[in-house]
Image (cartoon, rainbow, N blue to C red; front, side, top):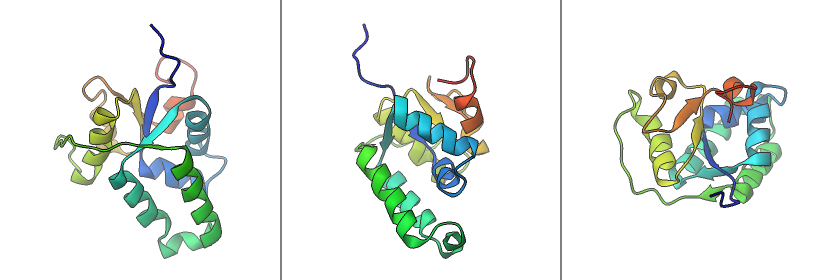
Length: 143
């Protein structure tokens, strides 16, 4: 029975950064689709990583500090922040386990990521892991 609530989706930091830096990219199209049709979920750990990465000095060539801050503000406003209790160790890159933990505790339908460490786990405990291109493509892999 449909609840009327949009499906929850985890978007990896690499996709969010690509979306911010490259507005014509598959990552940007994927983020637009998530924000339009789904509920973006994040945890304190994923938000902290996003802030850390996007504020790195190397990105000033692409986005000034004001635009980076605005991007972070908008994402914080539209995201549901989930308190994560679950701990997993399945990912070969331990830094990526936070996305799996968030997906479990946030009851996510899928994870959008360009990271091969996460992609290699598809599906993870019944949660699909798709690239931005797969997510926006028509067909069975797109949500």
